[in-house]
Image 1: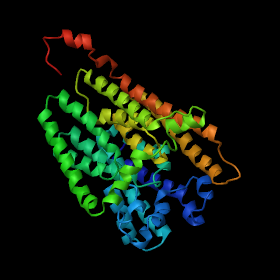
Image 2 (image 1 turned 90 degrees about the horizontal axis):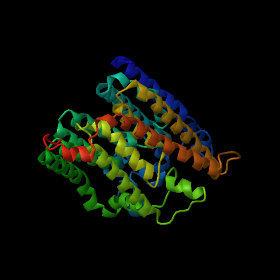
Image 3 (image 1 turned 180 degrees about the vertical axis):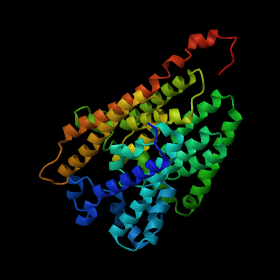
Image 4 (image 1 turned 180 degrees about the horizontal axis):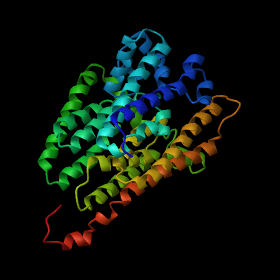
Length: 395
């Protein structure tokens, strides 16, 4: 179904307002627990406003072990918003939410430009809309989507810069370098990949070095936290532990499973007869990363939804898309109701039920991956065929 730009703009605006209405109970009730979990309106934005001394105007990375636990650009956004917005936790949330709404609208319009036949989907995706104001992720998602858009249109310098900005905002887009490298290899443009990687590294370094050199402990906090954290909410490891399968060495298992998943993806992409686009493959790497990571925050659906939309090429794929969105909505409700119980609510979701729903969500995301990958099955070149086809050039 094709719609106009105005329709997408209107849908994105309505989705932003609907999401704000969902969250607005919390500022009106003082962000109290377990109330903010019962009403599913918890947000990191007000929570970190005081905890990271942003309300006092302190630079995001100058507090050592109490610095913000995010990469540089997100920390700068958090700090600058606190400096510009009049003091007060609710004003800080409202100002941050306004900026996030504008980013959501921008991403919706960009998706419409990239995939006009499915351009209406993001504002209608319930799990994405429900998660819009939990964290600052949309800042990084916007630049990640720009990096994909420019890459597939051969504007590779702009793409590399955008990816460097995205990784400096949230680290997840770093994994897009894997399909990017494979695409360059398949196109026999290795020197172009070297140039792309150099521009990406230069952009990342230009953004990060000033902070790393002036406030090294605060800058390193994000990386230290992610390297040393145990299994946490939403992860397969946390869920299995709650169900009685308490695996040891979970950090190593997570890295091992990630390596296996990314290796399998690499082999799959190398077997395709024609080089894929980044828009069609980015979702694969992101699902793999999130399926085996040590944490799955509820706002991570904001990363997967745009990538799933631009990866689809057939209306028949909408069935699995909506099924997956349903699983994400179920998880969205489950995490908040479980946290409500943990923080003393009279009712809530027990840990076993929560863990089962978390595993269902992971399974649904893998089903989405399999369905989107299945369309490439007929275009794969298997090793025996490739080796025997000596008369044909590669790729």
